[in-house]
Image 1 (tube, rainbow, N blue to C red):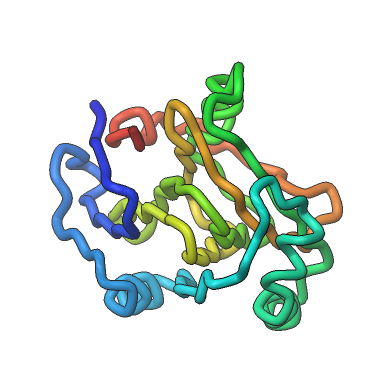
Image 2: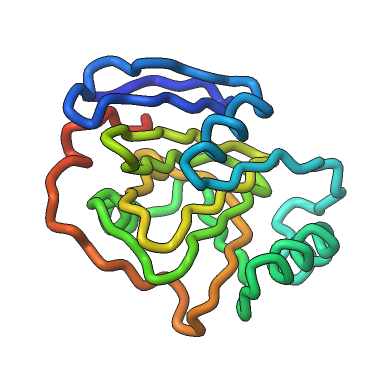
Length: 187
């Protein structure tokens, strides 16, 4: 099953047992923030007027968003901040995509800000699956212990700033539940 999406921020809420059709769909940033805040998930829209040269490196990206990066780091007590970049047309991305497609959780928050491109987070909370399609300017913070998965699409293209408490970075605890395979992929 696949869903074709435009490159715009979208929140779809599904009953976790009925992945064929969302119960509701929201595209306004303030409504998305309210809907996610109600289940303990932080969502923000940031100004993306920062001037970045094509192919800007991690240091330039972090510098362009320094005040916001430092605010999030302070608010969450995050020790490490990095930048993950994946260019369209990168060979062998299917194994990378597959790594994130199974439901898992973390012992720390998973915090991402999309500098460019897009990706889709699926959060399983209170009998629902929240599909948050994040694009340039979106910050999403998935609380520690939240069951979720991430789909970067079949030909991913994104640049994301990531915050960590764990010095080793992204460490998943897979649930073994096949729920993610039943939901629409981010195509």
